[in-house]
Amino acid sequence: MRFGFHISISGGFSKVVEKAEIRGCETIQFFSRNPRGWKYDSLDHDEVETFRTSIQSSNLSPLFLHLPYLPNVASKESNFYSRSIDSIVTDLERAEQLGASYLIIHIGHRMESSEDEAIGAVVCAINQAFDRVRNSTVMLLENTAGQGTEIGYEFGQIKKIIEGVEVRDRIGICLDIAHAFEAGYDLSKKEEIERTLESFDRMIGLKRLHLLHLNDSKTPLGSRKDRHWHIGEGYIGLEGFRYLINHPLLKHLPGIMETPRKDTVEDLKNMKVIRSLVE
Image (cartoon, rainbow, N blue to C red; front, side):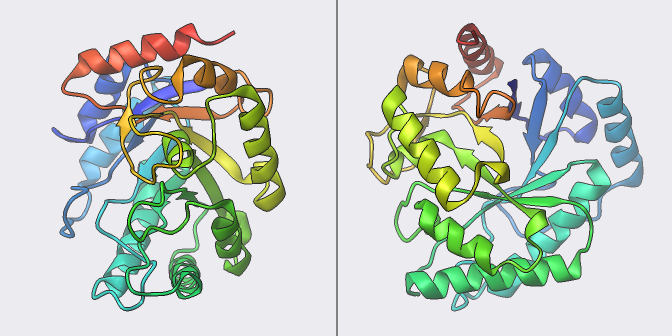
């Protein structure tokens, strides 16, 4: 398994590879713009070229672009539904410009909509985005913890979304370990991990799984509260992660950590811990 972190683009794309290498990354995830705002300027051509050149001279692969936090395509009643689709379109284009093969999106909140209406809204948004941007970028749906009105916390919900997508060879899954645990899938024990993987394969298909978000959970199994924690220090624990990263059906996948950080120290600690579990 190739390990990495979400890397900040603060200071510009030209700083990304340096930050990644300091942390010992083999793969990375990043935003293309401010994740907490709607505003975005065109990418600077020279900055993009510098970034792509630095990536080519590094050992980093694959690259994962992550959609900002504000877009929500799970409710057509939202004032930001069309704007959210535009946001996906922008980052599908930016993924290609930046050399990222994948774009990760949060499935979203249904708000006042029913579950079926929310699933329909997500499907409609994805189909519109794919129709507007016909490149090779693969969109990865990230499972949720089921906090509030989130959808996409059950494999069955994700299955329905995929079934409605017209261009299915461009859709895949990013399985967030903490979110799955918080949604009720026990990933702390061997037997339960096997049961969860069997369910995932039956409902969605392991062939659609392209990335693991390796986050421990600060909240208990089935809490429906999204709280990431340091590897081995949460409710999933070291043995859960040891079994997951060495599993024959998962060990070929990249693993990105989104663990809490104040500075580089926490990342170095988490990288050391996760690598110590490789068998």
